[in-house]
Image (cartoon, rainbow, N blue to C red; front, side, top):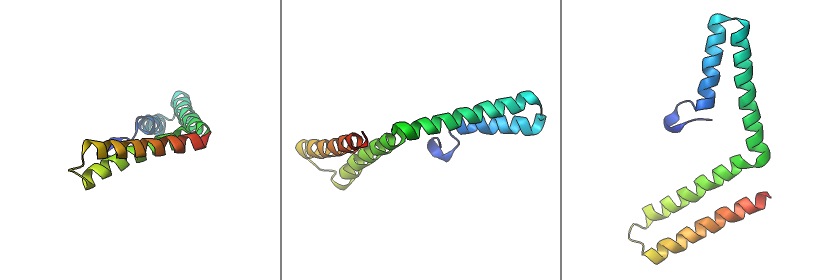
Length: 101
């Protein structure tokens, strides 16, 4: 789970802080904190995978990038051309999501 700008995502950062704390303190509370944070990350990843949310998020990004690419390649496109491309990308997104279920 990477955040914007190539840094750590919030969940990964929390896990790294818990690991760092455990490595420095090596007490039972630090170990339990690391165990809990890691468990939450595993549960979240499993949920994302089982529900298909990870794929839906990927399809959403692809839809947006497809629209952005069209606008870059066709900066003088008419409103009707833009609407047609928007409709095409949204229908593709909807078909991909529908295929998951």
